Image (cartoon, rainbow, N blue to C red; front, top):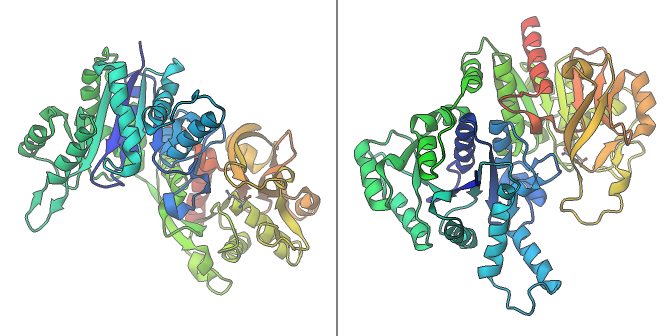
Length: 537
Ligand code: GLN
């Protein structure tokens, strides 16, 4: 069958959850037997979000092929259990970069290069790219930003053109809006939705389905009114009510028959009713925990939990797998010091030191690690968290005064974490870290090996610094073992402490591979260790 294309746009305000709606619809279609992928088109000028501060745009998600992407790709992977790639995230910057490079090469044969058709042609080419692989029955394209924004116009124009190029039954446009509730009037208001659909229509795109975010159920007379004003069928006004967890949304969308409306619009042959058994089982365990643990997340972006999106979701998956309610307690590492660390962390059943960049909050992370190391509290370190564990051990166990990562102190007498050799020549910041999937060999008999249940693993990376192997022998003799090694480069990927119930730290990012269907073993076993620790208290 020819690939069908669904476009998801948003209006009224940002943060309505287009990513979750797209992922939920994709899940429902996948559960019916269609092969589905989702891509995100972002209207900002950055080539990718890799150079963005997490406070700007939340976490930067890294794909297998090493693309630094929008955090919505994390949702796509967690819901669908299918890996995404560079092709799944496109920005205005990437589009213009391509067109301008072509222009410099003389590819436009003397023509004036314009937004229409050259930029829109390039957008369309990329919108169709994944579909042309023949791998997918359905490609869902989420357009970032809001309809009416100056910068999203070329994307909406590309959608308008594609609807003509491909034909009416080949595409479906879903527009996400907000129905605000006015407390004083006791009413949900439809006017912002009407206006945003009008904006979209003015740009030549008539939505087929409206998904209306709302804090209250939408009564049928209101659906009727929206349908009348917005040129959609009443049964295509879909309610998207605030959910207890994002993982409820596929079931809520199923109840609202979003998948059925899409199937009807695209004239898809009915394959099967969605099989959501494993999804429901996951939810059942998530909502009926038999135990509860407190996990400290020590990091420097804790004011914006979106900066740690994949870690939070990995704990949700691991919590469900253990039938345990995981309470994440946030600790700004800048505020942790040797005097308050015991008070702050005394009720924690596990401590995670998060990934990150730069000096700020570094000392607090070291204090947190010293505390958990000395008090046998389960500890997991990710990327910078692993590097901190190495520095803390070097300073406080090996007695290497002033030991540091050269990221924090280039003049340190003991660079136990140092810049990777192939990073030293690099001058450009964007897309030049060690990125994406690399294999790692786990030592038999190690904790890491027992966690994964195998020796050869592959995990995703995003870093410039690494463990300095000159110090490896001293570390191992003192009880900190390197139990995961990259077989090609010898780079240390996992360190773990002997004589500690659970102290494991990884240079890679396990959180990027945890999904509902495949909760990540490191998180699952870390939560389990926290449960055991809580019981032993
Ligand atoms: N800043 C460290 C590095 O570049 C760690 C990166 C991270 O935590 N993702 O190596």
